[in-house]
Image (cartoon, rainbow, N blue to C red; front, side):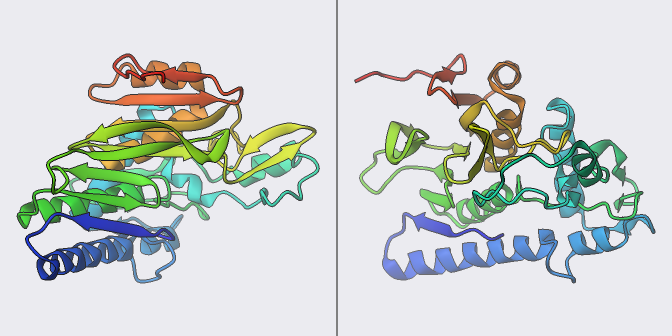
Length: 298
């Protein structure tokens, strides 16, 4: 998945801990082989290679992941979209851009994108991309899903507590050996060397999407590397979006979606969803939080 996974478990001894971590690692590798669009033998690659040709029968696991992705696309009005994988690479985000691509170039780039085009047949467990050149990819949800599955496996093995860090996507359960909850920090997007707030987590996931690592400046305007799949234009207005949820998969997808949607629409959505909370920071450094978030000021 192009990301580093750090796994921490609470166990009776080092030998047991190593065994648990090895099993979790194998589960993450299994997920990667399932959802990778780069592995030509994966079910995902078969779906993509048959775009415009025929429907592909897939495992229930992959079908269900795609189905859940489609549901998130619907509630976010396409701000999250796994068919985004078909976009042409017209943005480099290497600091070399001096002007935006033309309207025609952008439109051509996104012409194969659209979650509503994707056809699912639950009875047959098939997936069909009706236009040649369409693709699906799980860059906005795959890390979270893999972290959830690894967490589930470890809990079923009897591991009482742990934390999975998928390149900043945090998934926790139980407590630390001393009984205290796991503590995670949210990076200050105005200064990525600092943490602006710490939170205690016991059974939840927290995911942050931000543009403090990768962005481009055009005529003094800051554009994020996170592109709106509906327009092909990089999102702007938000520096970071942090989502708290029971599942890392959902938090992963909503962090991207709210970043694209902007503060007003993104926060309105979050406040309608049960057991989901958010902290958004706009490009002026103003902090916005959902209704159940409390931030203590020092």
